[in-house]
Length: 456
Picture 1 (tube, helix red, strand yellow):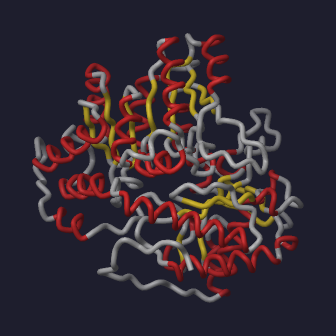
Picture 2 (cartoon, rainbow, N blue to C red; picture 1 turned 60 degrees about the vertical axis):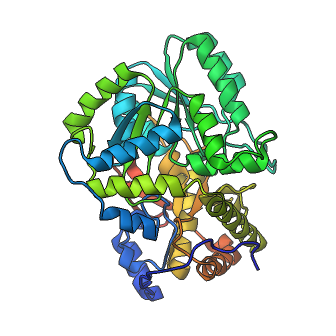
């Protein structure tokens, strides 16, 4: 049995679909072999993302009824603003409808063609916003040797950052720390690393921002793993990290514990004023930012609940147990696990499928066909780089599959089903074959691409 118990009880339920094997195959074929295109009615266990998929609490549902839907100056914004200011220490707070809107606004103001944005790892939408500005996204994740257990595998490589700043400080316009490092296995960033990055940024006059979508989970893992912080609460650790940065953006569909929403929070009033101009043009009035008042109320409550130690302890222990079970089933699981997901190395699992034939997609699709489980491909389909000369894609650094854990949604028996399905797929891994892309868009191609089995 797992060493944890859910720190909540269930008050409402939703039926789960159980499509047959034939129905699953028909759905995947109709979706162009792309799990993003499969309708939710054909999914049994959906571990695609933790973004906007949380089950809200009774207090959040109650907060919806307090929503002030005034177009300008709503009370709900005042409450949201007060909660964010108290949490982060930043005086300028701008709501947006989700994280990628925040990225597009802020990075669009910071970057120009030829500039550089540096990160521990830019996630897919962040990279798209950097490149939309004509700038270059440079990832400097801390190196982790195969089999090495780095408790802070999400850190940024400060040695390489120092070298880059010495060589190209005039081009580097921002450094972004993604906490936790979603593209890098969901690993946390240490406070020590944030301090070291801050010092380098100060030396070269470069601002430091946080992609704080999972700030609370990062803070909890710091209390578990980093010397000198075990006596602090997750909320106190989060405040230490926020104080080291010049501002942040966040998708509040993650640690906001709600189904929609995001924010930009800054120290610089001048930059915030420019961001508000963009906000008005594309999102809405600055006190609602594309959200209903009821959404702002739910987010304010969620930001209070997410830093509760009992909830975060359950979240971390659930991911740890789930990763252990998948490992016992034979899957190569990235260790140590974080909080929001468990990552499996599909490249190691399927060495007979070359990266250009999308081994992570092959494994993800096999899970769905076997048991109606939907997960996320984080390999070459998402992070591969196209050859400008028209040649094959440059493979992603790793072929990962993310088993994402929606907040307060699935129980132990649901995850046991996933383990059973994954074990069955693993037992036939040598029989899996790859895929090829037959249609794709530009940035974020994974959402709409049409695939075919490589043999067809």
